[in-house]
Length: 144
Image (tube, rainbow, N blue to C red; front, side):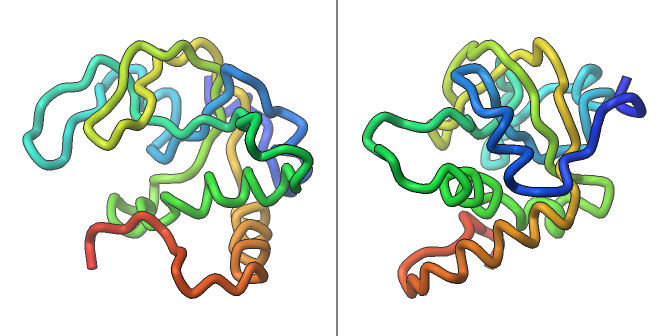
């Protein structure tokens, strides 16, 4: 299944996929996720869906940059590749929300894998976030 997925190489391509049921997930991919579940990393409790990050733009965001919105969503969890291993990457899916996780993240059932996210698109995200010059904002990394 995943060999047939397209790869998003530019942030603008990812913006073109935005929708109410579109999520980004950091894992080994749809094939690996089909045979596993997400777990709460603190307690080990099995969760009823896969932890994912919504890509829908919230109404309060207004007319601001869609690229910056998506860049934030990817930037937040990019540390998971280092934490969970080199086979972990970002991929985009269409999903149905089945609950909320311990960090209030959506838990989803994957309806359709859409695309892999290439490092070139992730590099664009880092550049765009860094260009905001915010000293109070960074990835949601608990490992340090």
